[in-house]
Length: 315
Image 1 (cartoon, helix red, strand yellow):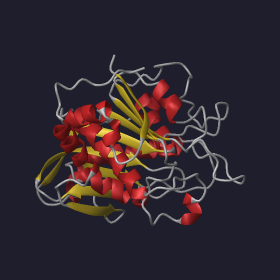
Image 2 (cartoon, helix red, strand yellow; image 1 turned 90 degrees about the horizontal axis):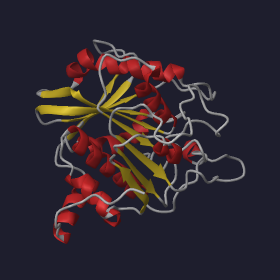
Image 3 (tube, helix red, strand yellow; image 1 turned 90 degrees about the vertical axis):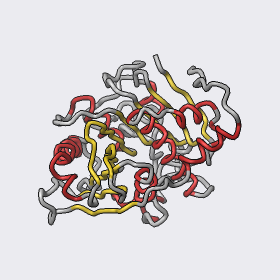
Image 4 (spheres, one colour; image 1 turned 135 degrees about the vertical axis):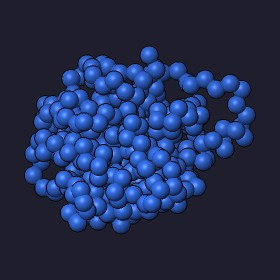
């Protein structure tokens, strides 16, 4: 069991100020930029970008969407994170209802990563520059599997990632039915990933919505096992009362969101919790500003939703 992060004599006022700030939108104005085949250089697949409008140089994070989902379903989370000074890049994979392997999406994610060097500066607001030496990779649901697979070497990129985030990652339907490539080994700290990792899970992901649909984040192939196989430094937060798709925007189609067990509480609180934790982690890893992350670890009750469990391993 991880121990709490140490904070030197923090006052309650300091704690609340530090944490509240990341769970509410940041101060920067944001521009949302669709990028498709009309762009030169042309990206390998369509991309949605959320970027600060203010001139400056910002770290970059790429978010990979889940199975049969659209990148614009995550727009509120993307904008929230970008408002703290991060350029968010969300590729749109080809949609297929067939639950095939992940090889195609891994290759596409690698191609988008390599497009960033020349392509990203050409589409950003005037005066905004990407710092690609500070590059994070995140993925939700099967996109989490895609992200972990890419950094594990199942895809090759010219750029190097500095941080990895799994948002309720899923690697198949059961321990014996992993999607390809089969990355889970069921051995502790087995992932050969030399960077800090954040895993955010949902408490309701293992539960069925009804008798017609299986769990969206089944036991043995979900966030618990991903965190179990991470090497330090790694961080783990579970939104106890929310489900697998509750971080999506409210306008995500009901015929998709109805497939997963969902929480009864305000989904905006879930989005702010997920985005806030990501902001705190990215600030700590990419900007060497770890105050918000340390505070959340020390007192998770300051988050908008119930976080349980909360763990981390530093060594």
